[in-house]
Image (cartoon, rainbow, N blue to C red; front, side):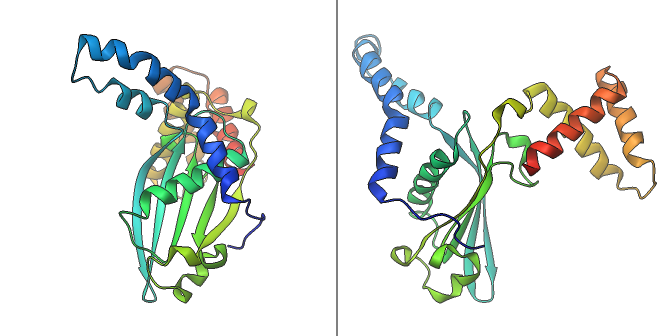
Length: 220
């Protein structure tokens, strides 16, 4: 994977991260005095910050190959971020994980829903490594982060095409049933569609449309 965009100065990302957290900071300043008066040991500000955080690292995996150590991170982002916001989040993710993991390259895969983890990342991905290249991990020492930069493969999404939570649930049920069945029967997709149609009480055509919608969402 090669670098596709010129990396902006670090102060640009710091400014964007500051803007992302301004609402949470303002709210925390407002509620702190009241929380302190009623419950001196309250940790309300921590829960507010956690709730308003723009991303969640759902899973991480060490990938050891050819005497190199790489890490993969599955990250669910909240809201409807554009590419520049995802770039700013990438810096935050790396700043967080580099203090607990030691690697020569890292891959961040972005999802808009946790149900998609394990499939193609709809929002794209970012590589943090030498030259922004996953394949060059062996050219730097583990933890030599000053020698690493970002390579981007992020997608600017048409958010009007995003699946609703109900549609995601139906797609997940269809995909799980399809993978569990694991049949080579030529009519297997139709059979799975009929199963999910009966389970959720909706027309088979509606199930087909949801599956197609998710395929397009994941690819574009």
